[in-house]
Image (cartoon, rainbow, N blue to C red):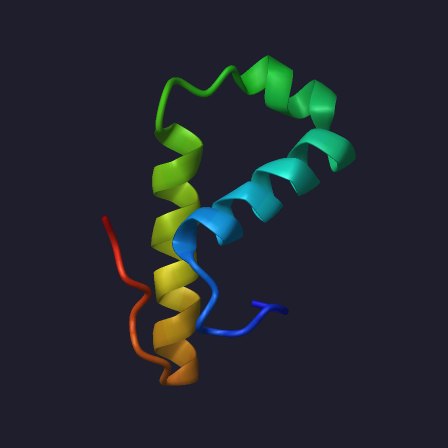
Length: 61
């Protein structure tokens, strides 16, 4: 959110995953999320946060 509502969804996902890898690597390893799980979670909660702010939805692929 710090980069604004116009940031691309892929950029947002990359920042969140990078943060998780740096902040909680052991938890991330223990969870062993399958392919696409983190992407879907990030997209879901990002869209919910934007909706609460009254911002337009991020474009999805």
